[in-house]
Amino acid sequence: MSERNLRNELERSCRIAVLTHVHPDGDALGSATALVLGLRSLGKEVSFFTERPVEETYRFFTAESQLIETMLPDIYDWMIALDCGAPDRLGAAESAFLAHPHTLVVDHHHTNTGYAHTNIIDGDSASTAEMVFDLLNEWQIPITPEMATALYVGVVTDTGRFAYSATTEKTHQVAGALLRLGADSNEIHHRLYEVTTLASLQAKAEVIKTLRFFCNDRLAVGFLPRSVAQTIDVGDAELDGMSNMLRNLQGVEVGAFLREREDGAYKVSLRSERIVDVSAIAASFMGGGHARAAGYTSNATLEETIEALQKAVASTL
Ligand SMILES: [Mn+2]
Image 1 (cartoon, rainbow, N blue to C red):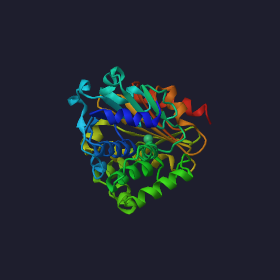
Image 2: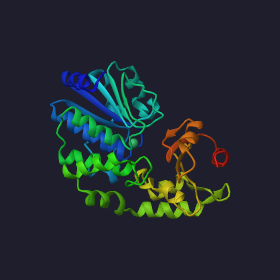
Image 3: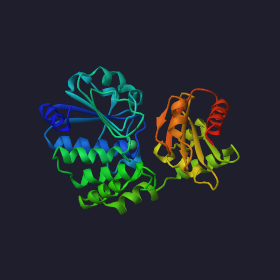
Image 4: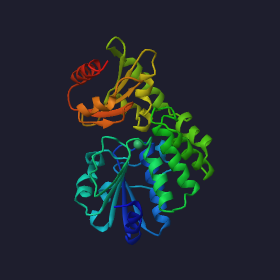
């Protein structure tokens, strides 16, 4: 379906559900917020669903979200998934999405196989927010300052502040257009990168205590136990920069941050400097992501998880 026909289809629909991946990041929430507000400006009844309440860090720009438990898939004419590389990343909404007759995916994960009826996938795009920016323009939906702010958050977070290799000339052009449309980059940077919490600082201290090196010190692994996370009450968004912090150590190629989840499994977040394709490593453990930033979940023990990771990284160095 062409993007214009798609707009006509959406134009004819009344109720639209917008979804994104579990543990939504800045790009997921930014692109979803802009699309939700844009479709609402067309008079559509648009609901935005997340599995858990949006984290404090991101609340300054997000549209109000509802929890997936309240979702009644039958009442929606369309279901749209943004920034979600695979259907299982939709969490509790996966089966409803796959069963729905009118679904759209907009995503930039190059591992996305196109699990919706209509798929707009661009593995070269630095963020889903850039793609939503293009779609809103294509559909001639005006971008308000609120929407520009949300999209700018998506662009700036998914490019690591315009630093990752996926950042292109176009990324900067989109960012420039968003500033012109009312995004306040100083305020956004302040909210995202300067304001920190005591919990985040304490989590860093804990992770530094666990730090271990492998592969001739090219792999740095840090770990946060569940008991500690609970004690300091730290959220996912507050742990966002942890694998970057490890990767940024001099001489380190891969930074790996392991967080013990409530169910005892380990969420492994990987960042690489410039050689190792961490999306390939994540994919070998049923995860996904990008060449420089990827992740997966491990159900093995901590030591088994680290050993398997160490072997996978060693084979690519
Ligand atoms: Mn993204």
